[in-house]
Image 1 (tube, rainbow, N blue to C red):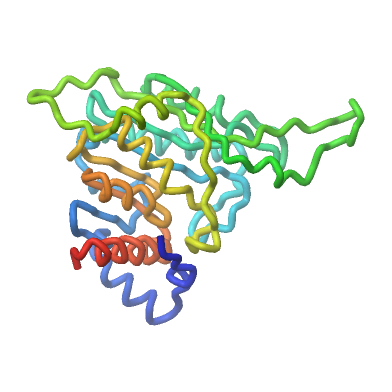
Image 2: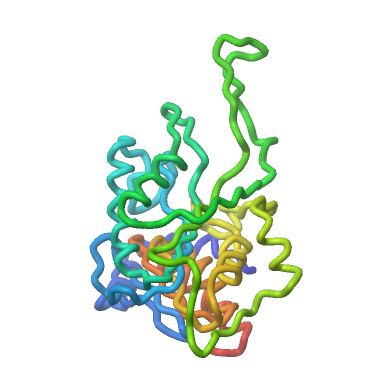
Length: 281
């Protein structure tokens, strides 16, 4: 995958031209892929009950330097934000629609918070039903820089080097479609991915050009395991476009929302590079 570290660094005339190109919020539309330059929380672009699968990694509220989002809100404000986007996502999902939400297990910066437990509770409050939790082991324990009270019971820090992918659904888990849609997951993939501990590396911020990218392997697994070929996959926080890339690569309809114009430009550059590679443009 090609890096686009400079694609998000637009200024002046480039930003103005891109803003004009994103009339009616549709920033890019081609090859079963639509990217909206819009705030997902307020957008009315999609019809209710039109989405089969949501794969997303919402802001973590850990102080990441996004260009158009405050990632260091008061924790209660962050939970309110979570409730709003989860409510909107619920409305857009089909009755057998599914949600794969990549979030932190917990938060230590600025005070300990049980992010996974709190956001999952909010999701259930707005109507989502719980199915399972996948543990994503990034293998990054070597990055630790703090242990609290070193070799003392005074105030040690316990930090799990994992993130989670919460899998939920709207009304019913089993998909009942006639004729039966096509699954493209292999036997080996199914056996491996239904083990709820996934081990693969994270993505390089520098290589992608986004402050918090997730690796393509994450949406690829979620898309192939939890949706059929041809179904609609939504990412409310599209960022650098990784979910849209994997939706396209796996023959799904991809829809993304991204509030930051420079990240829309980055996603567009990555998608167009993929389409050139596939000789689609």
